[in-house]
Image 1 (cartoon, rainbow, N blue to C red):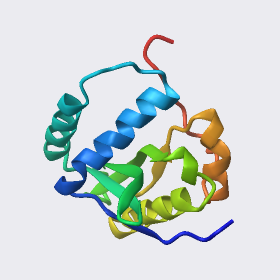
Image 2: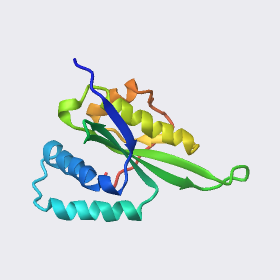
Image 3: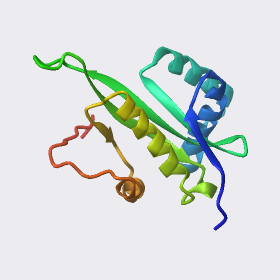
Image 4: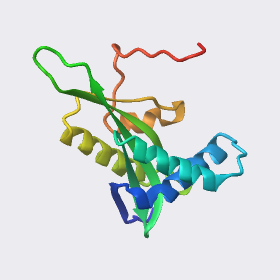
Length: 155
């Protein structure tokens, strides 16, 4: 396998079309979505990003092209008597183009996200993973927590 030069950085407004393209690609390739208004989605995602500054997007680039993304949602938590500022995080929407999976692109994205979590002094970071991606997260230092419970609407 040939090494590739990957750059990971925090995404900004100029990355909205690429981020939307990756979200669109995931919906069509992985989930069979048959939508037809990609331009409207690009506009909607840009507006959503500007309205949700607590969601930080990171992109991976190879040869100047965005080939992966990961999002960190930062959530304020209820203060305690001894800690007035508390925050946690949730990793969301991690995606690497299929042709570059297994080439450390996702690991580099995850490293950037967790560096940001440490910088922000988040108490914990969670991820809701697909079954296929559990091994990826485990390889990258994540573990199951027996105290973490989930609830999903409609179940």
